[in-house]
Image 1 (cartoon, rainbow, N blue to C red):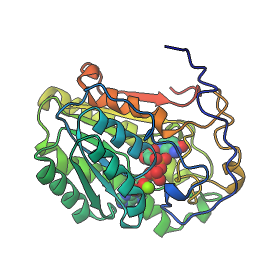
Image 2: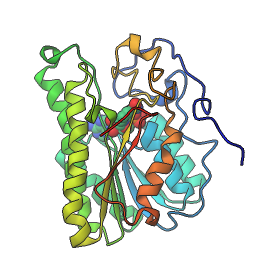
Image 3: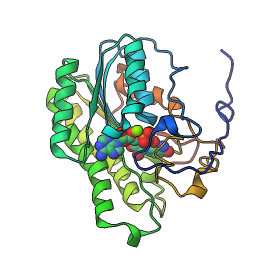
Image 4: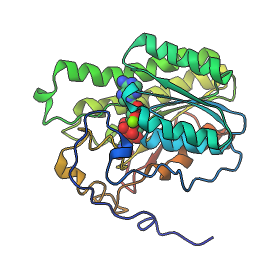
Length: 294
Ligand code: NAD
Ligand code: MG
């Protein structure tokens, strides 16, 4: 197979200035992020598995959903009701792969929605053995005084509470051999001054993955890991995730010289979900385009 220079695998993008209301529609971003619809080829690594992915309508979660289905898994995606347009594409891709797709719209800031999301996934998939806690809210502010209490609360609820509650509801359903994956971030280690609330929630994902692994691996045979992406071009960024001046050069400062595309992360989630990573637990897999992490 021909070698690919990682600096040139995808173009260096200079997205035009663009603003969407949170959570944004990926299908209306410029350029449209690549979630692997035209490229990801599976090889049976997740045959018969049953996966729930929060935030699976777009970006990194969508890339994981497409890849999981093409690897043979039935996949439930949770997302916000206003994201139906993005979710439909992913549902269709899962079904085109010959797998069962379950669509679960709802706001995971709410405890009952977290519990109902897991119950619906378990009921419709006939069980659950992969959980990807990926939904997150990222809204930039120029410093701590600009973060309202409502904003702080919404970020904590969307990112930390949802991941904790969904996991708590899912664990009793997950048999030995199951895998739980959290989406962390480079922000867990190198927080931006404009993302104070968001960055602390990403540090929490690393911490929860490590702590939970101490319990679930020895006691239940469930592995728990995290993925820490660097700058990936997704609609998270132009829907108030970054100031406009950071959009136009997004990702260009990373050692690889460009933003990542969600499709480039899918295999990391497949690896952590599959038996290929049977000796990996309590770890964070970094995909930062070369930026150093601890
Ligand atoms: P994205 O906007 O495409 O996906 C985030 C998803 O989170 C949304 O699609 C939405 O469905 C979901 N979400 C947010 N709040 C929710 C709520 N209250 N209830 C239910 N769902 C909710 O963006 P993405 O970049 O693919 O983000 C996926 C993950 O990757 C996030 O955890 C994010 O923190 C992480 N991440 C992204 C980057 C990046 O550069 N894009 C870098 C590091 C980490
Ligand atoms: Mg979305």
